[in-house]
Image (cartoon, rainbow over all chains, first blue to last red; front, side):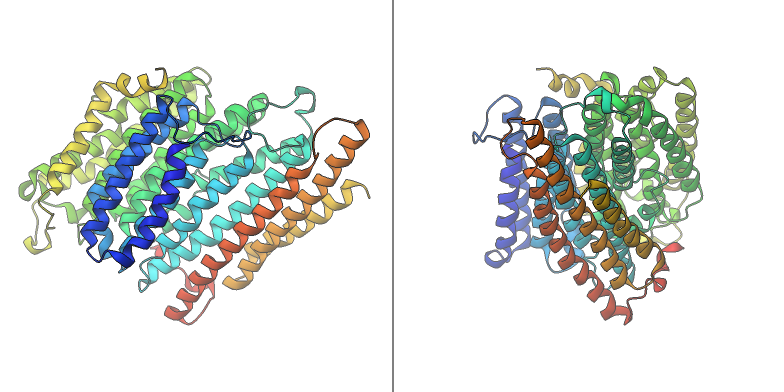
Length: 457
Length: 112
């Protein structure tokens, strides 16, 4: 609750700051300080200290899981701003406004992880989506950015329509919007209940880009300015997954047997489509878009197997996936050539950047000693409790993913650059920051209990 | 009137919206169809709200203001739809400035 209120206020502050502060690096520092403050407030709430005592009337419920998720998102956002905050200046002249929109989205993220009423779920998703439409189209002269914004907007509002119809049916069947009260088992099978369940499942799958509702993702992620793609593909997606899990764990727990086969089908489709299409991509940015679909398939396993293991796994997945992808996108936004050749010979010129990138890719592929390995392990273990074949599919697809992640590592280490002039220039502090992020990803893989311990005390 | 009439009317409106989104090529018309979908939901929520009010009154359940939250939700949908309109129209205008058309068939640059 602390962070939710303060992030909205910070958004307004940053929006006004462009009038008074002309120096962009001051605005950047202000945003970083704000994020650090938000993180501290969230930690304080985790220890039971609240800024305001507000009667929430059962609309929001910040339990430990939501607060730990918020802490992970805030930490990722902090690294995101550190690594690519300056790259945002290249997008357009409205630097302070982009940061303000990020803070407004942040308020939406907290609503989505902590909702207890479907009204707040809907509002949270919209508070996230509407600023994201703007950020997607923020490169106003670029036709690709325009196209991505229009596509995202039309498909996003279409899926909001589905979500709302699902919520309306839900209200018709249950008489309230409460997400926490489980329904009376005698009316579980009614057609209104079933319709609301399926519509909400489809709408949420749309929002987190799970196949067969993924088709907007590659185009939008490819067309949006790279800095904002990074944000959409990581922090936003993770928050929506937290909401997805909460919806099916609390609200639809009694209809478990109805939705589980659907989710299993979605997992298989997402893993297949995401991984197999990513293999054939020429552009690294587009490959990362498909890879984010593939990773969504793994995260969907947490929804499939609602149990303690998978929920803890989702936290670990959120942290390792967000940090790794943010790091890769931060490097990508400095490159001129987005194809695999753009990475040629990077290891010779920028050894620290190349080593950190290699760690990020290893983590995404799920190689031991990185956070990504443990996260995948948790997910597969959770799935194993229900359907062994699903776990086998997941493992095979993780192997396929190694192929396209290692193409980048191969380009960096075993090929030389044809054209020295195309080599990117990084700011001085950038390699060190990137290395710190990579170290965090490794530490997550060695000491996951420091993160998961937050859940219990 | 029984709730079924409202249900069918709302679903019919919603389906018209969905079909419009899937078949029309003009961005503005697609946009109008999405608004139609949202308003179909508004109608449904108001109908359900009335239904729950009557049920609570008939069963004499002592809740304060039964069915009021459905109507509250409608206001939130209206506000969000207005915010969406302002952003969506801005995006369409931005596109029109660049390609002088709002036909979504032009939008295939990202396919390759």
